[in-house]
Image 1 (tube, rainbow, N blue to C red):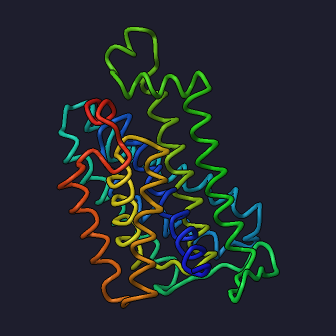
Image 2: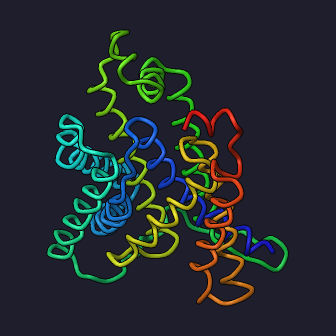
Length: 286
């Protein structure tokens, strides 16, 4: 049971960061970043192949991923929003941007799995289960980032501007909010979350260009299961998705782990379309 909990929380840490990134973008623009998985894996590969994949390497990777996400916004979303293009089309444009990243990364790095060395050594034993301290660090880093994002959104003027833009961008503009600046901050924050997700995925398992699609699927599932539009509920949804995935890998068969995540997603959409943890007021707003 300890191994199940540790594996669930580690996977949930990665999925939660992707879900938070998706939610931040969705709240401000109504667009789903289908290229999020590609940004995540490219960030992870970039981190592993740096000269110093340590603490400095994490910071460099997060900044690079934030810049990559912002470039995706400028090239795939901003021009479309100015022309009134539907958000579904813009979401697909972001998938195209992700595929371009995939191609470029394939030209630079080998198309194989990359794993990062541990940031901290040692192991912890609980009962009959022994696991590395690296896994505890992975969960802690994700939790700190998500908590920091919540505090940023709830307690700062920039965060209030993001919330105002998410609620009504036209009204926010009338009150003097620079919605263009808000969009830049939003995409930088979303990209930073994806960069950290890539680092953590490389630390607990491996990253390769082929894992981009599964990662974005798990991230979307976490966001929808928890409640699309809410950062904290997305994190809870990530735990639910990772729990279902890990349970089938350990106790049933790895063949059905991805399928059962889809089953969970379909059940939630049928019974609680606003998300397992969303209340009626939030559902109406979204």
